Amino acid sequence: MNYSRRHLLQGSLAAGGSLAAFGDQHLAEELERKLRGRRPLGIVFCVSDGMSQGVLSMSEAFSQQVRSQGTVWWNLMSSQKAVMGLMDTASSSSLVTDSAAASSAWSGGQRIPNGKINVDEQGREIESLGETLEKSHLRLGLVSSATITHATPAAFAATVPNRGQEESIAEQYLNRVDVLLGGGSRFFDPKVRKDHQNLFEIFEKQNYQVIRTRNELLHSKSEKLLGTFSPGYLPYELDRKHDEELMKKIPSLAEMTEAALSRFLSSGDPFLMQMEGARIDHAAHQNDIGAILHEQLAFDDAVAKVLTLTAHREDILVILTSDHGNANPGLNGTGSSYRETNRSFSKVAEITRSTENFLSQCQQELRHSKLDLAEFFTSTYGFAPSANELDALMERLSGREVVEWSQQHKNSVGLLGQIVGNVTGVGWTGICHTADPTQLTSTGPGANQFAGLIRNDSVRDRLLRLLPI
Ligand SMILES: [Zn+2]
Image (cartoon, rainbow, N blue to C red):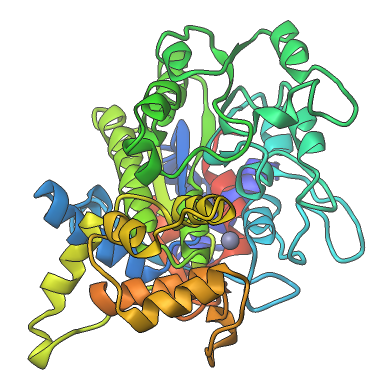
């Protein structure tokens, strides 16, 4: 029995086929024929990194509020076309996974310790999806709003004992990944790399078009593409939107997604593409409700692009999920009989900066002794904090401890998240990843492979059963 046949049979069993059927040659061939007709040419694997359930439901309410329409993900979940599931997330070292172990579980098919990329407890290397696809000449694309060498995209194509080895990850992408779009130019740049290798030049010699700006992306023609639009992460969408220069230079996640996916769709070759909304996770670590909802809407716009580009096709499978929860934000009811809840939540729309941006401005102005915290806070968040809140925040910004019983919230971001939460109604469990299962929504041929509660380390087999390898 060849490799793909074995996978097809396992697939039919996992999809509900009878064990008694296994071994019956005639029935097996019939099952194989049936499945073959439903295999996709390409798979788009969309990751809202660190998205707890509350982010999805609040982004729906937020989208209704600020755009007078709901989100594409919510809409897909309520349609007949969607197959619903949950992702059981964990790593081999913890009930709570990090992105490196989570994406490695998807890619390598086994749980490994946090912090590693496709390397197990014993230090053995595990074959990534990218390596497997390379052997069968399938194309791979990675799109992310973090550095393109960050853990989630990296685990689909690279193997390193430590997720921080982003220079090595960048090298491993060469000729294994056809389209790379995101942040992280510093890991390709000879002026910044420790070994001074010019990866831009090396990629160019292998027929990649190397681009650095939004304009270059919109006019790019080449099949192979390396686009890095920032030395590190791309800016938060909330900050990008309020800065004309950033809008001009940095493409949106939807624009990068369109550039990557349209290439794969027009080539007609089988492919796998991972698209990651990476900074949803970062905003959750910072208890930043403004940034997280704008990031989730930017991710949703990218998903909308995927669904529009594939609407007339019956050969593309689209999967939406997250690698782990983070800080589990949720909207608390406020006021008598919760009648103030909607009004409280509507304050989120008035936030004009990310927490990251707000705190770095505060620190800068503090250094020059010209911080008017009350005024700056009010202009950023759209409401005036109480005198006590202001005092506590100033203490914290000056590096002093404030009374706080939750160890997770004992820092500037935790304190700020609670002050903003007092007005918006949004609460957070902490500032770390959480153990809950994540949402999983699929549509297209093979979507039923992703129904119900599935473990993150079973994703590799499910994808390989479907792809024409
Ligand atoms: Zn994280």
